[in-house]
Length: 540
Ligand SMILES: [Zn+2]
Ligand SMILES: [Zn+2]
Image 1 (cartoon, rainbow, N blue to C red):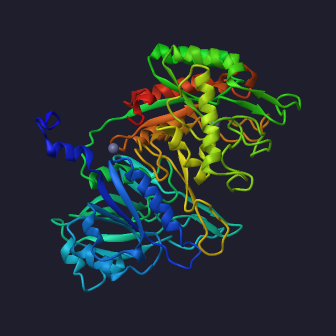
Image 2 (image 1 turned 180 degrees about the horizontal axis):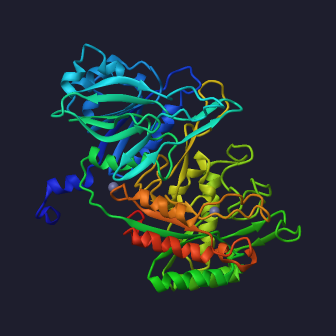
């Protein structure tokens, strides 16, 4: 038969067979933190969604003997101190030639168990745990810990915050300290330093098929954090041949019916002059239910009546712009959720006041809004190439509607340990975790294809005229983030920018919006990134 001519089964298999991956995680029950390990498992599963993969998540107590052998790689997330590891799992880790990656806690149950001859087999030893150098206090708020991971010339300092008033530490200071015994068997690939004492320990140690990470790189993640090391090293763990390749993306944010054509023209002209493709996160249906910006009178502007918006979009489209859909109204009902109730200010698919899903939340409810917005675009002659969730947060059920309408998203996301999360239960409470990605994710936990945004956006403190805008984030911050992102071999430099920062009405509070924007573009270009059309990175 014709379709069997010149078959190449080996190649076909490489292209189509996903890597089978098992993630086992701690879920001690009953316990307040029973589900925290599941949250980390979801995050790791998302990252592995960068690769052509099929991932199973299993609580460690449900591990059954022999399971490791049906996967190419198994990851154990030791997030809970002294959680008992089933002997079946230890036996299988000990016996297998398949890839095993162990994170943080409980390695002692394997390495110090005389049944396994760990040191001889792997050529390294587990020395013990190290946490804070001393208990913090108001007189000694930063006692120090193993806080600095060195990787590809960058120093990545782990998050740490201490509140003396409540005597609470927000940090993940514990590391498992290991030591190479036999350099023919074990290599310390990455080092972590205690910046107060200058002591050093392996951050990632590898012995053949066995990898150990000294901490939980999914806790307290950030754009200059050791999370990026995990993102990069996954390529080595899966032995893919990803060459170094760095793409850059820029997105104009929260463009709606009230957009100022002058700012869009300035930005579109600039991007076109540089031949840099760009995206426009557009809100199709403008709503100000409380009349906050309209003298107390409710205002609603569908795309069909949004003349300036359409003029701005058409101008941008002719100069390399591409449209994505950023919410239907980017606000919820007629409540302040939690700023003004006005499009672009508020959450649409999450009650940010109560920190719960909205009252009528369901996949069908969200689906209706997504379809309404997409239809509004289409009726006006536009075809958005992707979806971006307003304020990057939607309920689990709402998020599940996204892949039903858009095969591509362009965003960060929040993940939950339940479809109906309860964050206040005393036992087994749920967790929500926000995650950004330094590269394309082909499938996340909710089935979304994600084009990344990983650098953030410029913010100016204009709290004197808008109390909710009280953050400062500079072009230098974005530029530094872009520098860090280069440690990921195919790391992106993807940022977004609000065109309203160019508006003259913000003077004298903000006068450098356009200059700062151009500085970011220049910095990212100088770092060697290739400006890319985000619509070419979507689901094929
Ligand atoms: Zn927005
Ligand atoms: Zn990659």
